[in-house]
Structures are given as C-alpha cells and as structure tokens.
Figure 1 (cartoon, rainbow, N blue to C red):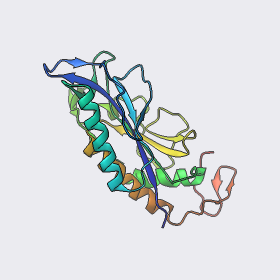
Figure 2 (figure 1 turned 60 degrees about the horizontal axis):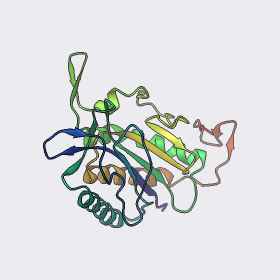
Figure 3 (figure 1 turned 135 degrees about the vertical axis):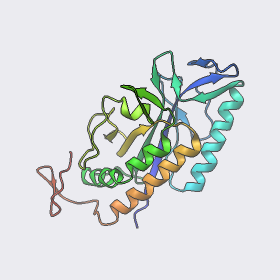
Length: 224
C-alpha cells in the first residue's frame, strides 16, 4: 500500500483581547521544532509545517507549534480574517509521497479522487458565513475565489493560486479551498485527503507512461 505524506501552510490574521482585528504581531513568525514560515504580504503570518507521514506525529507537532506561537504572542489569537487587506485567511494542504515527487499522472489521480470528498472538506472547514447577492453562503473563501471552478474531474491546474493545483516546486498536489485555520479542523481535512490519495494511488505505477498528455491504457487526461 502506498503511504502518502502531507504538509500544511497555516495562513492567518490575528485578533486581540479587545476583539479588534489586527494583522501584525510582534513575533508573527514564532516557530519551533521543524516548522518554518514564509512571508505573505497579504496575511498576518503563514506558518509552514514539516512533511508529515504519521498522523500522531502531526497532531503532536502541530499542537506544540501553536502553543509556542500563543506563548510568544500573549494576548493574540489566530483569526480567519485580515481586515487590513479585506480578505479571509485559510490553509493550504499539500499531498504527496515521502522522498520523491509525484509524477503528472499520480497528481491527476490524487486530484481526481479528492473531487469525491471536496464538498465534505469544504463543509468541515467553512467557518465564515457571509452574504452574496442577498443570500447566505457558508464559505467566503471558496465562493468568492476567482479560481473557484465547477467540481469536475481533471480539474488540477498549473496555476499556483487555483483551488487544486500542481505544485511542481514541492512535487505535490496543493489544495487551497479551506477557510478554517483551527488546527484540529485543518488536521482532519489533511488526514481525509491523505487517505483519499492513498486509495487513488493503490493501482498507480510511479513509472506510468505519459503519451501526448494521456496516461497510457487509462484514457485519463493528465497535465504535464
């Protein structure tokens, strides 16, 4: 059985004890252990997890990281909104396999399988009800995204900002549909994506031949 790995980019703003939305903190990029950060000029912070394989390892390290962040930023809590830039925050989840990059066909297989559970993941992670055209919607991030596409197969995109993208730099499939930045919710979504990806890759040979953009013998369109 193929064992998939996953990584998470926690993108968040901050809120203080007076319930006033803030975007900046003194120790915005407070990280510990194997965590790192990357600069995002439109977010309060973006904290990057290591590559996880075992769920219990991920739970322990994520908990330690956010306890460390809160201790270094007394009086602030992560918040899903950044009013300074008029945008909602969220998470990016990368799915791959340990020690190598997914090939084009494997990425397509993972994205294709994820489509089946994407409505569930959006439902789990939607945390910002808002109004569009006079109607309430549950996920501001998903439904306001200019990259939001119909849930059709072969949806993986080469555009980094697409909701399901081919992360060539990391050799993974990146999912960007998530509103909620609560660690427990994010881990749940990452774990479900990991299991879906493992199922998708059960019958995929890493050396599957790609001919003219099609996985030979399976007739499924693959992005190069």
